[in-house]
Image (cartoon, rainbow, N blue to C red; front, side, top):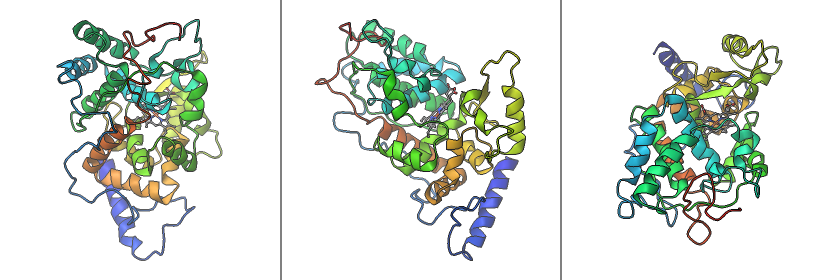
Length: 354
Ligand code: HEM
């Protein structure tokens, strides 16, 4: 609470001095206040309303095809622990960014395809697969061949966001995706942003998926939950000469990442509220208490910096924006009956080999 007030005080002070300035000091090491061109709507926040779905996707798609399907997924997610729930939010992102939201990330290695997406380097730390499988087996027993794995991943990402935000992030997820049958580890690195990405690269990689800067900054709030392996940010720890991480956090992380056995330890992404999907992430960006260079990079261009301050100041607006951006991400390169299938088991295509 004290930190929140401190950030607000800083923001208000900066806003107060903004009228004396001609610009926002590109290249300045100090964060500047929100730009007047920020695309977040002003408070009070509008009611949550899902972005219009891509053609073919529909809210309530399974209502007549498999009644209660979404509740089955929600029940499977509800019983998972907070870490697995975080993993489910990330799983949806990693599915959508590689070949679209088609559950290609779930396909396991086979003789015909020994290197699927899940073995790509960025995906080795994914978790939550067992929740998807648990929901799928209930749904197959109830409505065989009806509910796609891609939709289960999308519902699970939505539901994990709901639970981890204590119900504050609640939105409808359009459905009707089909499952893909191509999954290649070699496509992960070119499509998934690395933790050392600068802001230009981040914008370009999100734009390649039809997501704009507002979506990108809103979705980055997912780094208020879950964990990271130390190897993903060790270049930012002492004695790094270039890191702008808060020195106290850097020292703590250094201690937590030091391992006598050389193990790649894990730490919470959000040092304050690690299991809450909340706007604390944006406070952490402002106070330079974030793990990745890609998080810190959001302060380094005027538009992303303005959006970070807007989200920190207006959590409800960010919550709505997060839901909208998740729906938008869920529209990425969606498959249909013409180029997809409804898998029987999420780890394998229906007709092996693939
Ligand atoms: C902006 C570009 C992004 C980069 C560079 C990035 C990178 C990373 C990295 C390196 C990790 C830690 C992996 C590990 O070492 O264990 C991570 C974790 C995570 N990311 Fe991102 N990410 C980005 C965007 C997103 C988005 C858009 C979402 C979801 C909407 C997301 C959700 C998560 C979650 C929830 C975790 C924690 C997962 C867990 O605890 O299992 N990230 N991310």
